[in-house]
Length: 485
Image 1 (cartoon, rainbow, N blue to C red):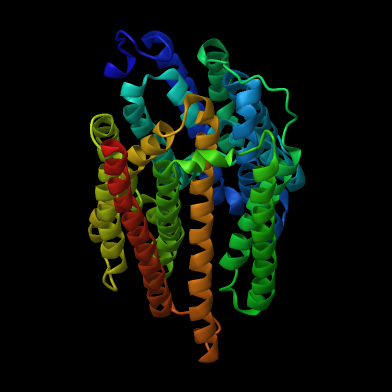
Image 2: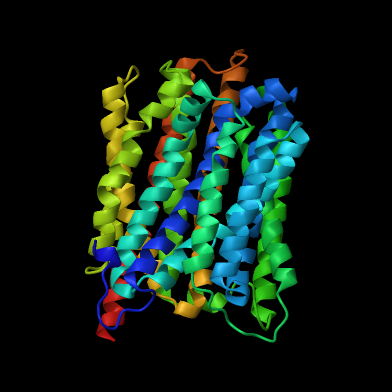
């Protein structure tokens, strides 16, 4: 396989070690991404068996998401100080031990605590995984390995609920966590053997203020998005609106303070000069807008499938299958093309196709059959797969190798932030339609009203990806300008 062939002048590791490093990183990434989505289907069972309230059990999911989002920037910065191998292996070990703790949790409170520890471990891995790929693989293969990584993340995200439902049909919820233990131990052993441990020596103190502000900004943003998602629940809408406004304001204030601290810090948590590259900055904005669209679609479509079309939760998960299939079919080829042709051009083409796919989903008929949903979801997956790996290559390829950890952190933050913005926008759209239904004397929206609200949300997703396409197109001119100069 070309990914593991050696050529004179190659950077990174020899082919055999490259293979082992890729296996370690991909095993860890799969576990971290799965655990962000797979647990949702087990919440009803966890609630019953541990005697927890629904409101408390929700934090089994939210605790993991919050811990991951709040520490992404911190771990990306720490990677240059402690080294990729040390940070990645430590995060993987914490994640694995916390998985065992989750499986053995006697109460929901212990389970939530273990999930928070899992989130910290997951953040340490996810924040630097693309940077490790850049360190391990030569530049000529960067697009290809990022294409495979994009396939892995997208497939894990989309397949997680279906896999969780399948496991729960045969086993108890504890096995959703226990399965991580042998895989995690194998990945720790591999990572300690083959992942490079290069680090940047610095006498400057760690940017504690920047780490705290970034955690507050991301954490408050996640909580604001969660509050927005509750806006559609009639009697709780007022309380949810106040919470969303308070957390949103806190996130904005913390983000502004973070930027000011980074400008003054001698060794900033996130060096802002990486954004001096126009191509990097535009790639980051493109990624943010595209994940807004994806975030809306991923949360909105289950509502459409179940509330409007009457499919079961498991059938709804299966209806997502064409989406990751499209990514699997396209992303590796897109990554290979990005090593030879303009990543900006390839990303723009992919985003245009993704936008068309979302528009097709928004135009679904009132009584859509599974095959009709499937081919439209396939178009979305193919478009997103053709966009993501070239765009990630553009981001990582336009910073120095020393800043790969920071660029990798920005990539993870854009994904998380975009998906949360998408969830928040969906909550706002649903709240507007729920309020309209209540004004007409309905206790809740009926199937037809649900379908209308979801279609409007999908058109918002189309608008977000159209913006991403426009921003991506502007990179083509920036790239040509850089070449001509």
